[in-house]
Length: 290
Length: 289
Image (cartoon, rainbow over all chains, first blue to last red; front, side, top):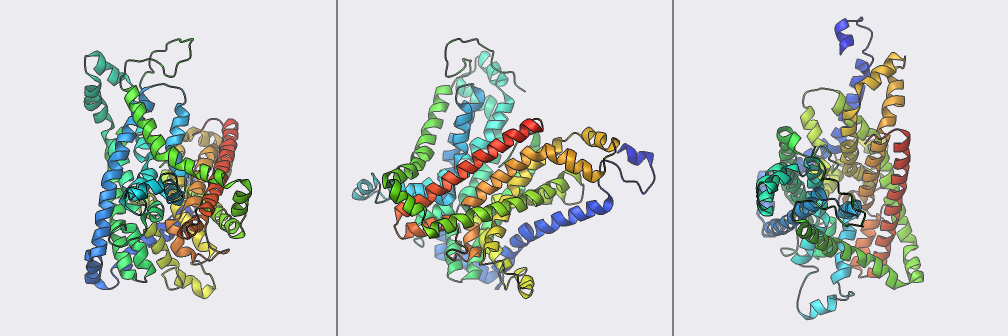
């Protein structure tokens, strides 16, 4: 600050900043708020999980229903995330590399799942495949189980995580423009070669970032999955649903033990995300809102 | 910055501007098929199911006293939480952008915790913390303040889930603020408070509105973090998404659909209203954001 170097007298604050006491008060208020709403809840997950010692914690995690829940969560994520990566890359390619009518509408439609309640995201599949729907009875007759089974959980998860990858890639690829691809094409590269060797390296960090957020949400989704799962222990319970069941049975230590695993996942997500931002900030999209 | 595709004057109506980059048809087909099959067809089910009920039956279900109470609780709680986040989210963004202190990176990363932490985990953690026997709830209990199992608990959970929306929308705009504007204001004799209130805040208004709208929209639909702390007492602390789940468990699909349709209709009209206000404020304060 130039005014600082001129030393206009100790009592006069720089005109473009706050007085030291105001700074301290603002920081105190901000930290207090963050502690009450973010840090303490996070800390309480771990203290509750280890309330009866590490042995009880480990027992809750290695119990068969908990293991089944982990397996199901991983399976669902392993299907939902790649599906949304394919969609996200295709959508970003179409939106960022071409000019066409109705682009703004298409972008808003892709964002739609963000503004729909997770419970409604589950409800739509109940209406689509339930006994009261057009295809529900046909599916039941042919022994195809979608609702209250794994396919329904996968569908609901895909619905909820639908925009994540596309949302990350669209602004990034719009920023990068089309010149490099045009250069590659005019030098004789094929479309796929251009995509693999020019576009993909340019977007890899943004893609990783999107995949990270998508994975975190897919593993943690609760509302949508809860509506379509049917809560069958050991079969259609994902980890968040398992937490709910244990909690409602007043088995708090076990509930928080499973929750602590999910919280670790969140911490890993945040760490990787921060590292990506520090290391590849310039290669990630400048505008990010989600 | 890439140069835009060469401008071609096309007097005829074209769906897409011509260019040499391939793959439009493939990418567009994948995008549209996936969008229609996964999102639009399922969502349209709400509309068709509501329409098939007929107006009178739909109105009877939608105007049910318990439904209206749940909608009122959901929207009022989300509104209060978004207001709190507007104030404290802006404060947090300000501290992160303007002040330098050890551990700033950690605090900055922590703001995204609600995005990364599964909502059910947040729900039981907040309940453990704010229940009468919890760390914070235990301190408030002697003062006669009850948070868990009341509407205050719902607001608390919604503050948690909505915070990053406000911070992450306001923060980048704050970083872009030109220092010269503040210097000019100070030179012209404005006190620091005047500068902040009359020069800085107005230029942040569009971003603040966007953050508020995002937090509000998220709060209205939130389920996982709320149900544990809310106590779920009908007419007092039962949110609309929970009532949908209850109706579904009773296999009362028409009632569940009616609540969902009401929620979607109110949310979308609110977002339209906010977009309109935002367009106006953007016109007034220049094109920040």
